[in-house]
Amino acid sequence: MKALGRNKMFRFLLVLAWMSFMFYLSSQPYQKQSLKPLLREYISEPQFKKAAPAGSFQYGRSVVSVKRLGTYGYVEFFIRKTAHVVEYAILALLAGYWLGSFRSLNSRKRAGIMLAICVVFAVTDEWHQKFTSQRTSMPEDVILDTCGALLGTAMYYFFLKILQKSRKNALNYPKTS
Image 1: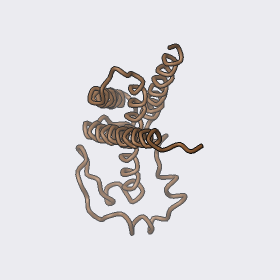
Image 2: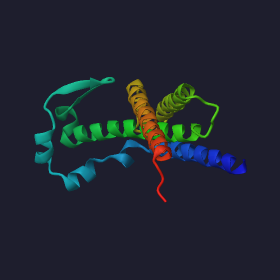
Image 3: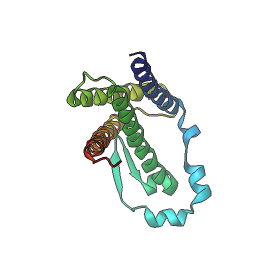
């Protein structure tokens, strides 16, 4: 019984560690996280210009375009927004791993709690960014974070089904002596 309790605690600590890492990243000013110098170092602007579409679109209250952000800023925008999705997919997977240790939770409740953890954290993280220099707080980022959480939740259940199927097949597989 004690081992199960420690396992739950370990799983919960993984969730907290990931949240702490995400909080640390969102506490940094934009200039400390800018990817433009790294992008300039490894990829030439003509290579990016070939890949970057010429159009523009609205994200929040800003227009996103190569003309407005520059080639490297435009590419960085997509990398940073992809990071939102990936961070919250990982958070959902870790939350699912932790909640999986509670046998009393059915899959619907577990999924709801996974998503609730992610959305509440996304909202509080965006609120926290209001007070961080050179950072913005955007409802659109909460939507992206929620999409990441949904992706992570779907991945969790997809992998869970595969695991259950492989365990079932292993039990039904005839043993040879």
